[in-house]
Image 1 (cartoon, helix red, strand yellow):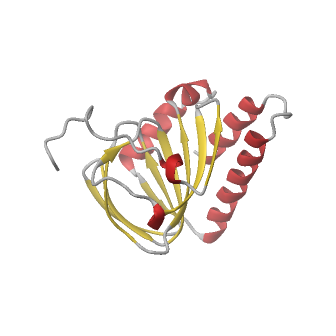
Image 2 (tube, one colour):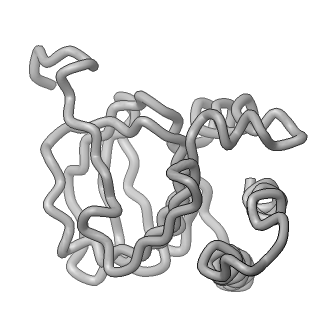
Length: 167
């Protein structure tokens, strides 16, 4: 790694390069990303909690100095300020990225911040089966619809519940 400090490291905003990105009050984002079209820096960090749902393909990366080769279907948990170093992304890689601010995590009834920190620290990559992936994708689709439909009452509260169920 370069001698770059954490403060100088670029913060990747996946939504800039996503096929589809939906935001709720800048605290919650759902993005659908075809990885080959994303121009990632060699090293970067995130400023939010991120849950990546690897739908297709393979990703080789270092997450906070731990080396992983990730095959879809999988879920990747990343905490704020974790250092990411993508080494190789397969041409067919495809993922949904759910990211939310620390404030959004704190607004949830369970202490989502600690749960995500623990998952990201202990087991940042979790292999899942196709059925589990399909359930996650249904939740993400529901979340997208709730965020898009401004007429839904308590959309923030409902979004919190859905994110909680994905954690």
